[in-house]
Length: 106
Image (tube, rainbow, N blue to C red):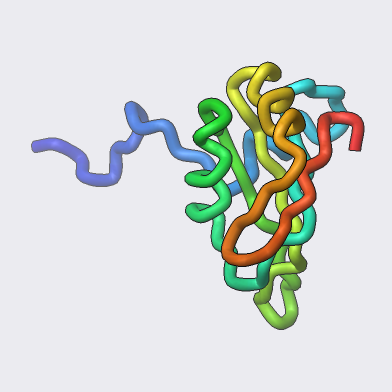
């Protein structure tokens, strides 16, 4: 009988874990995204940025007390070239707000 709790072949990670794993390392494929709407979710952010390249991980930082977005997030692209593509575009709008992406030296 197969063990239903065996997830050894499924890649699981918590939100932001790949970003946090490289927290103190310079990584040219990481970005800070500021100016997010309180209504913007992780899925919204990831879908928007996917047009610039494959997103490995993203997280929106939330206030732990009131459980609302703090208005910024972090993104980890597969490729550093994706960061360059984001930065080439001078204006980014998501959920009706201008957002402010910063490169890896934020």
